[in-house]
Length: 630
Figure (cartoon, rainbow, N blue to C red):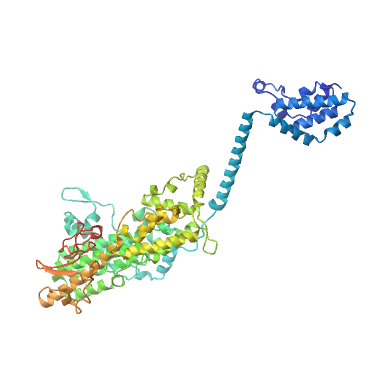
């Protein structure tokens, strides 16, 4: 057979795809499978037996060279074997001396590759680096997915269910909440009143100020229509226990009243502590507003018994608010109630003394003494510790030994916390994350970006220790009425964390405590103000009792002790441990604290007399009473 025929024998095993690869692009575009790049074309020029042609074919295929290089190699090998045959060697000898086709192909490829251009070698290195980088990135992504994205927190307790279990033990007849709930639902929150000029307004706005608001006459008429909810509020105030249950079908009308959703959606199972709603606690403020407004109506109408009924009903409200949660969140609402009730009692006794009998004054004094378990009032912190523990269980895995790693759910909690208070921009580490979406690709982008952040966050035990450390310092700011927040150790430690290299490692701590400074509420001063207002109400009752007995105001508060007042209240802002300042001025008792500036301004009130903790000037005037907003 001719060499062309022998080569065609080799081509019989070629696939369609092989012929496509051996055809130039221009031929393919013209619809021709020419196969002009086939290296076997070079083999037809040599008169070799089939075994040697097969050897050449195998070596060239194994070399994996470019088409032109393959043609050159095929020609070179054919020439080599042709020279051997002319020298008198047999086919078997030539094949034996040639050696393994695989090894020969490797040697030939190595030689040809070395001879390629510098540009090709540079491109090859870039391509290899790209492939290595892609493999590395894919490995990292897989690691992040396996270690962080798929990791899930371990939930061991439910804060809402724990609260509900306690309150289910309270007999329903002894719960105040059903009365409050029914009274709240009876109020049309969308109803508008109209002032003398015909302008609409909300009754709630006026109930904060009561008689001092020019729209008070219209609100008095409105309160006369609200006797049903007011009676329900009075009934609730007569109960010792609030008895609120989150997952109670009986709350359905109430939840729809303020939120349009049913009771099933209110603090549902598994709700993180930082997302738990305390709407019932906030709505007790509305209860207080209506009872306060009704009290002012009773005072103006000279109806002493009704005023006493309403004041007595109010005195359990602080305890009811406090029973919503065993921490500062509920306590701050409770002490706000204490301030309002104490100043209302002080104002009522001083302005309408003839409406109250001696027994009434004793009852009011006893009720004040028993509010929140007695004074001085202090903020509880058990609930805040529990919230930290809940955040840890909602955010970290648990290895069974008190440790674990941060999770995607933890990132989502941090984001929701920042979005809830509108301060996401304070933490660019989180604000730069891709948006979460239902689409798989977008969600994957978010999870990968979040996993990269998680990889830098410290373990559960380290975060827990730092959170508890700052939590205790935060607690100290609630108990310290003297040190401003921006001078406290809590502020300094948190600021140090936000500026330190540990910010990323302790990102959960930085987010939760670094956002406490957006509003300087001076909680320590609020507590101190509440305690003094409460003491002032007791002093007001004792002063009225003394006036009835002696026909005049006492020259000093020591004259009230111990028969009418257990002890003269100290001034927490006095450097020498002095007592609250008292004197009779213009025929009326004047009682005040020198305030945070720790200097006696002769009873001049601060720029914000109703919320003096926001001011650094003036004295805190306790009597005559200036009732604050609830």
